[in-house]
Image 1 (cartoon, rainbow, N blue to C red):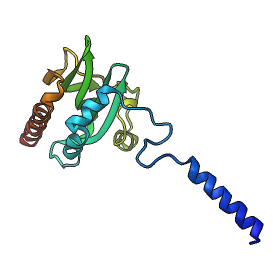
Image 2 (image 1 turned 180 degrees about the horizontal axis):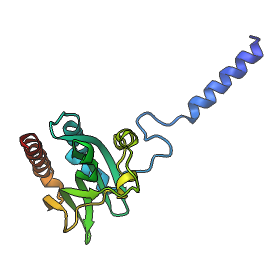
Image 3 (image 1 turned 180 degrees about the vertical axis):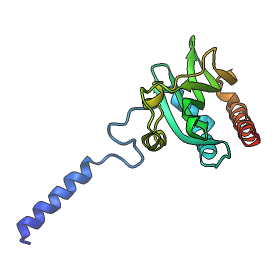
Image 4 (image 1 turned 90 degrees about the horizontal axis):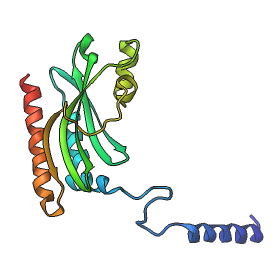
Length: 183
């Protein structure tokens, strides 16, 4: 390598270093978190639900978790259905959502039931696809629980009560685990 090439390479490396982002800054192209995302992070919702979905249950198959977003809400859900050939007909979403009610952020923890919506059912394809996402077969965006859904906890979010909300989430998830294991 000639001296000119080495100098040019060195100058190129120096330019790349100068263009780099400062250490600890968010990656380029990453949008800042929404307030509803921050609330779920403060509750450790993703990790709490991930722990449940990694367990093995006798009567249900469980998948996830997945972070979901809408215009005025964020959620973290796991999804599960009964074992057996006809278990696919109803999928349950268990999740924690942070959403706006009027001008306040509200935390909702609940279970939503989704009917199967695809025109045909192929067990092999379904089994592979359902592990990563439920939207294809159930045509749902994963929005927060509504009146017809099973609400397990709902409260307006207050930062000073963060640990209380976190304990409520853990209590609800522990109870769900016991109920599923009990059958």
